[in-house]
Image (cartoon, rainbow, N blue to C red; front, side, top):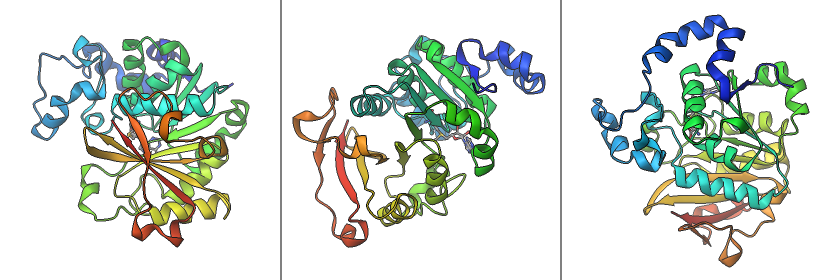
Length: 306
Ligand SMILES: C[S@@+](CC[C@H](N)C(=O)[O-])C[C@H]1O[C@@H](n2cnc3c(N)ncnc32)[C@H](O)[C@@H]1O
């Protein structure tokens, strides 16, 4: 199944055998350990200092000197506590799940946590440097046995060309943290999910995911338009379908929202004492805000504090 999938445990050797051209592009990076983070050498790029200061929130293992990052990954990786929460949430709602797909897997922030709980995790990314970082980082967390990686650009064409093995995988849940367009996303009052999200708007993106699994989770900017979330839900899944939105806060700072589709997730009580074991995270149902009345009546809002 999925001949083009590369097992994370032998990512570089498999890449060298199967795609020598791609391997040659990475060779100098591999030989020089370019992306390996030395915890004793703070980053030189000023714009990354704040991420460096909080590096342990991204990967708790980072000070052990086994984590690999590109410049872009510093502001892209999902903080570990959020990735852990999400994994536990999926596990609680889908206790028999085996296979989770992480589209746009970046440096493996999510894939690694998924691989701790699920026996088959498939990470997809169109940046070979990032796939390499994910593979190396999975070694740091000793979860490489459960992780397979696929180089490719997510699109309707990708689905068409990979339809056969994607269906054979029986993917229980698709998670995606698509690029938000860099830290500039915060300059807009409302983040337009149809025009600002990369590589496509929320509606076409959901259509691609729906072909793979009915359980879908997206990590989106905190200022995302809920009206668009609601409209996309109706357009892609029909008027009866609901979307659960979790507001994710870390140390009081809103990091983003998790938009969740699929009956097992919607039916699961994300409040009170029945919430998954969140360690120091708790869930409380939020009052619907005034601008989210009728047009977003198919959305349930919750607040998650880390
Ligand atoms: C926000 S990051 C994901 C971070 C990841 N969740 C983590 O915790 O490390 C988005 C990723 O999407 C990838 N990407 C951008 N466009 C893509 C496309 N068309 N197909 C696949 N991956 C893409 C980027 O290379 C980047 O690694």
